[in-house]
Image 1 (spheres, rainbow, N blue to C red):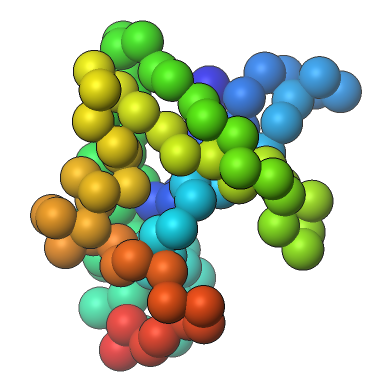
Image 2 (image 1 turned 180 degrees about the horizontal axis):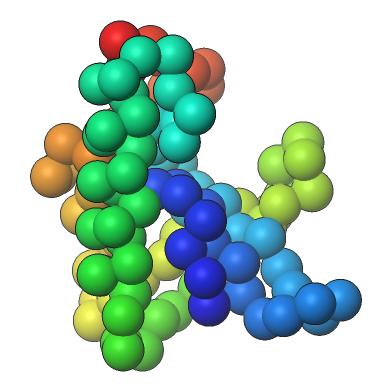
Amino acid sequence: MRVWDGDSIRLGMGQQSEAVRIFNIDAPEMEGRCIHETDLARQAKIRLAEILQGRRVEILRQGTDRYGRTLAAIRVEGRDVGDILVDEGLARTWAGRREPWC
């Protein structure tokens, strides 16, 4: 498993890999529109990696997005990873459209 950014991971390797976006959250973009967004994006990516590191991860697939990525709720030790990131201010609950971080 590889953390791509604050709301995306990649499972597997090569041809067998699967891009997974955490369902129902939006994290800042790594190539953000301002330094605040970029810094927060880095923090979210690091925190997601910390949460997942060495733990049993449960992936509850919810479908796919318009880019073909799997949408999934991700749980670690019974806790929803998206909720953790939102609670820590590193992501927002998805409201149907992107809101600016700057």
